[in-house]
Each structure stands twice: as C-alpha cells, then as structure tokens.
Image (tube, rainbow, N blue to C red; front, side, top):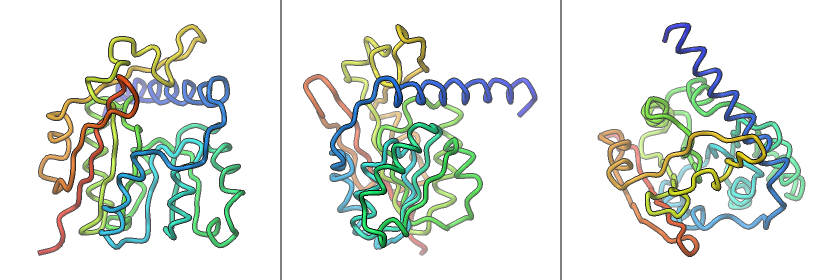
Length: 230
C-alpha cells in the first residue's frame, strides 16, 4: 500500500472512530445487558465447535461479551471506540471475579488487531452488526485474516444488515450516522450473494438466515466454519 493509500486508510479509521465515539457518548442510551438476538441464535454453533477462546469484534458496550463470559468462554472484546471500551468495562464490573478474569478489552481497529494475532490461535470470532462500515478491500482482507487466526474447525459467527433493511433508503438514520449531529460513515447493506462471496472457499457455511429483527428491519445471520483438518 502506498503513502496515499495509507493516508486514506488513516482518514477512514479516524472518521470511523470519531463517529462511533460520538454515537456511544451522544446518542446511545443504556439498554438491557441481555445478549442480542443474533448471539442467542449463534450459540448452538459456538457450543458445537467445542472451543474456549472467543474474540468479539466490535464489542460495543459489552452485552454480548458479558453473556459469552457467563457461558464460560475466554473472551477478548475489540472495538475502535474509546467510549465503547469504557462502557464495556462498566458492564464487566457486574460479573463475578472469575468471569472477569477470563476477559480482555482491546481498543483497536479490526484488521490491525487480527493481523497481530498468531495463526490458528482463536476458537471463534463473533461479530454482531460489525462489518457495516468496511470497504470491499477491508472485508476481503478481514475474512482472510479471520480464516488465518481460527483454529481448524473454529467458527466465524457474524451478522450484517440485509438489503431489505428499511435503513437502506435512509442510511443517515442508521447508527452511527447522524449527520445533523455532524458525524457519519459510509454504510453498506448486504445481499445473500455478498455473504456467500465473502466466505468463498475459506469457510464451510453451517447456516445462513435472513431475519426480520423488527418491522422493516432485516439482517442476515451467518455461521461459518473453518474446515477441520483432513
């Protein structure tokens, strides 16, 4: 990557971080610490993988991370936002000391974090509505990195907004985009072909469902597995 490309990437990262910092501090209001619907959907695939170490990409305020810790997993929560990191730290305080001891919070962009991890060192990657503001190039690199860091038979559990999502017509209304408050990032909405194309030959698809999470709000839930050793 040349210097100009590096500059664009840095600008994109800064814009993304600023937008999410402002969303979590200015728009987000405390919600239930119960896990999201996607995480509940993904749990059977996580249990079947028989792994212990989970990375929660884009952990936000930590509700899914806390749930995974309560289920006995070792969990690393990763988020680019310092505000999200602080909210997640507050969420972790409510857990027993034994569960907190299995947790780690990392403030980082997703790709640099994955690139820093050892090959075949992670049992599962969980990413709930995390990939919405990544470019085609970033997504391609990220999926290769997820495949690299997962153990054989490890799972990639991820959700993204569908092209049928009501927000596609008005992406400025979808978090973290609130241009009237002065912050937004480009968002994407996914087709089934987008999802299968990203997984490509890197993963075996275990399940792919389009779910209406609220009236007019559609998301894809995907569970992919890194092929076991032959």
